[in-house]
Length: 222
Image 1 (cartoon, one colour):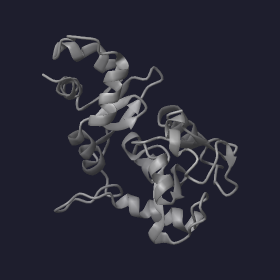
Image 2 (cartoon, helix red, strand yellow):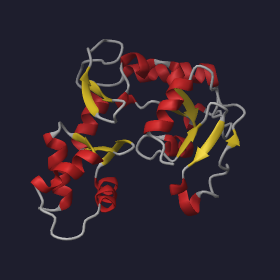
Image 3 (cartoon, helix red, strand yellow):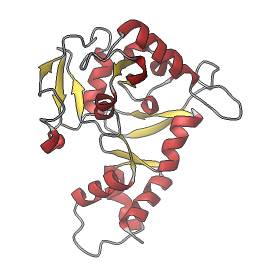
């Protein structure tokens, strides 16, 4: 069995997701270590083959789809970095039942952000067709209230939305409106049009401090 299949087995046994620590502790149940396979190698395979939920937490593609589409629950990260699945009560506000389940609440969330913020604070793009409603605390890690809280979001242009997203986590922001750039940007760090700790004057921070702290702690890759 390959390491990738063994890692998937650990995730499935845990419900479809797993932090790296759990993978390190259980991978040999399915795939004996026949050579030098340091933790870093396993981490690189996780990044390449699985969906990143937060820093050091990965899941299978099927579980990611369930979280995004079925709205059956969300993941909660404890103070000790343990991760548990929390079922949520289905409400009409966050899910419509029909031939296809959709996140109807996200449309309201986006409309509120457009009404309140009007533009991307970094690029100042204000064409709504080019703006993405970006959750600060990701949808899959948020309860119903947090998912629809306008203070849990920014309007970002596509590049910065991607860099900010849970699956990447290469930028974040401080409460002083500074943008932080991950060292993992490497050769591209000088190509995105901003510099590390640049002040983003129009960044709406007030009311978003708790969500930003969460993003810096669990999503951002420093």
